[in-house]
Length: 313
Image (cartoon, rainbow, N blue to C red):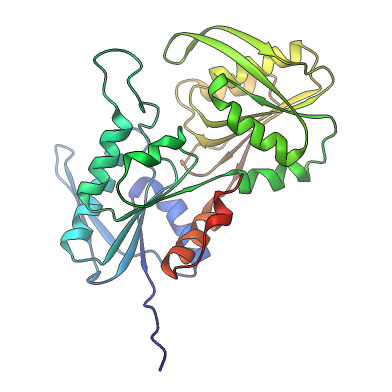
């Protein structure tokens, strides 16, 4: 009689509960039961309300600030480890604190490395994430990391728009590799924005390298935070004669007055995933769900089949 691999158990952190439900439904399972106890001072304690002894479990949770989201993931990992789960996979659609991936000036932390170590210490035996801010963050882990690309969601959508005279744009020099990958898939040219920052989230100067005259431009980036870079780039490209400008960004942090900037900008559309829950009340924002992508990869991981196709741009 053939051995039947027990099905895994899927849980979600509170801020990713909606995405967790979608992923579980796509996988063909129900979300596991977790109870959160809170003290009056804000301290909280997660509790698995079902046995996970010897099981493979997936814990879904993006770790965007506030730091409670990261703390919640760490506590759930620790609880799973102490409950004798066999494999504990942290499914992190958005890996927070990733912008601090190196020392860019003296006496600062490398937060991405610290977070990686904390996740492993807490009990994660595998990480599944999407569009890290820097690919080399995978090297901060001693455990396996499955780094997925949201381009598998975005490219079919962009091709479905049937836009002529396409041009891919990177909002900064650091995103040029991503832009070239999209341009190869869509068989079009690339332009790059060169920007200088006065400080974090504040751009002092931006210049365009390349020609966008008469082009339908697609800006590609891994995240949109205050939307300052994207909206400034879109306005600059329209001034330089672009026919239209759309932005494709995986993670919609959308902090501060980002919604207002997007609404007032010359962007035709902002296309993001649901890796981070957002207040979707604008016509310019299009959300593509990453639930099926993560459910598929989780199924492949559990059944030890190849996931290399999900790594391709």
